[in-house]
Image 1 (cartoon, rainbow, N blue to C red):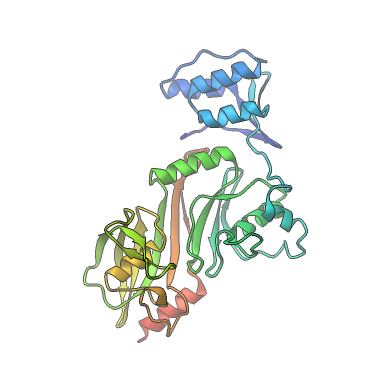
Image 2: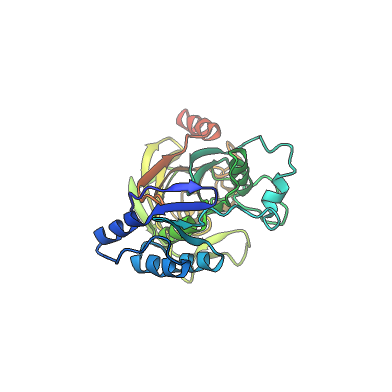
Amino acid sequence: MESSIGYERSGEWLKLPAETLASFAAAAGNPVRFIEAGSHPHHVRQWLLALGLFPEKWLNRLFSIGGIRMEGGSIELRAFIPADAGSDAILRMLRHDESSGILRAQALHFDDWCMVLDKPAGMPVHPSVPGQRGTLDEEAARIGLLRGDSLPAKHIHRLDDDTAGPVLYARNELAQLRLDEAMRMKAIGRQYVALVQGSLRRSRGTVNEPIGKDRHHKARRRVSPGGEHAVTHFETIESYKRATLVRLWLETGRTHQIRVHMSHLGHPLVGDTLYGGSDSKLRHQALRGEQLSFRHPWTGAELSLSAPEPAWFAEVRVRYASL
């Protein structure tokens, strides 16, 4: 919803003027009769469904937990439900963690609806086994706690453990529904920079090759006719004697997509031994997320957030530039 609707947050409740909601729906071509002040929650839900401003799934779930009410001329929705420490393993762990004030990931954006964290290389986004520590999901929960706000943080996309860069999180269910839909519609832009081996013959191009599992190596992926549709766009930023600095954009989000596609072109990433790269100057792939762009899940405003170049990436880039 591209919206200029202002809101007030009161604890767990999102407070919205009913008149403003009706006016916004009418401006969007959906005029609905105004609702009377103090209407029963059932009628409020029906009215909100008729407006078409919010997902039906979300409104019905709110109604089922008593999360819809009307006070005077304001609609109140229980949109900001905190994470439950009894069922959220990360939150439960952090509440007894003496190091909870130490942060390893910078917040590039933070509000009631979403946040973007700059993930360092070597940090997994989520636990691969129960109880795993040091994940970006843990950092997201810790940042909320340090700001006195224990809303849940759900990652919308992921990066490989050794890839640095921005990762988007939803901080409530409505935001998650909208951002998940944006991912499905390919409306979230992800821009990367990589250092690949050799000199690219083309200064720009597109790799449109399906990616599937490598039956000979469970950790690898490969270009395969039976694999999933995968599209990567690239352009040269700088050419060096033994490597090329490239910028890349993803249309799809397959596992190891950039690594597989560049290796398929004969230019594996520097440091990426899994796909044929040399690790003489770097012990993991030279890949970083540079920019993330998306529409804010409440305001609809276009956000474009850039992550600073990590020191390790700058160092290896300068090494190859000086060869």
